[in-house]
Image (cartoon, rainbow, N blue to C red):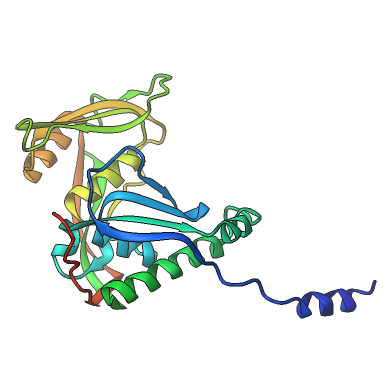
Length: 251
């Protein structure tokens, strides 16, 4: 069959229907469970307690540190269940995992729900933001050993205001990139890695005074030989012009 005929037949095929929800609910936050699921590429998002700021960031494909809006967005939480219909998820599974439309379709639906339920309004613009670079101090990293073979890899924090005055970050098989991502949620600003930092995975432990950012930065320097250097960068930010505070949101 000539190529032109094949292309004409393909063009005549009806477009697949837009994705729909199998289940969607948003309500009061519950106790956070280990079953929280962030599988947006597979059309699923479930959380018993998610900050509204993070929810907006996920919906709009924006780093959380670049979402600017009311302060309560960072502290107030909701529960959410968002699962695409089986037919929609099946179509997603037939695509390459790197297909950008997989994420875009889910995020479009999620944004529409936030617009409908919370009257979300936003725009994007360049803004000057504090940012940090994670780099080694002059003496170089200390107390960071190459990771041993360990199936329980990652970062784990213990210690809260209600249980202890000291917090501990235990890392097993963790990269410095993972540490940088963890730090940016503590300093509420983007953290990038200096190009001179080594790659690979490491085992280390970090202790600091619970809830004290200055103590955390001092511990980072004294215990790991790393420091955060503050800079100001112009970046594209998402400005929340309006969002209604859910009456059921919890701190």
